[in-house]
Length: 83
Image (cartoon, rainbow, N blue to C red; front, side, top):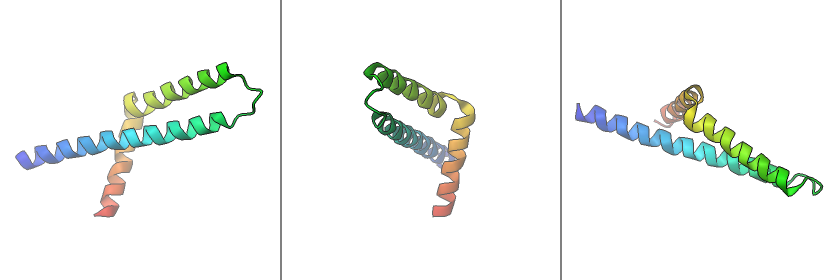
């Protein structure tokens, strides 16, 4: 029983690390793309777009259960191939 519990805890920690990695990668990519917008786009719109991207990606990776389950399935597929 203890072995299964520790395996579950490890998988849970790996899942949250994977969520954080995906979140950071997507936000960094989006912020880079926003910074490459033409100069005539105002600073206010860039800031508002960055906040919007942060909130949307945060919701999808941390709160939305369908996307979280899909990411855990993706992590499981990666782990299965590595073994």
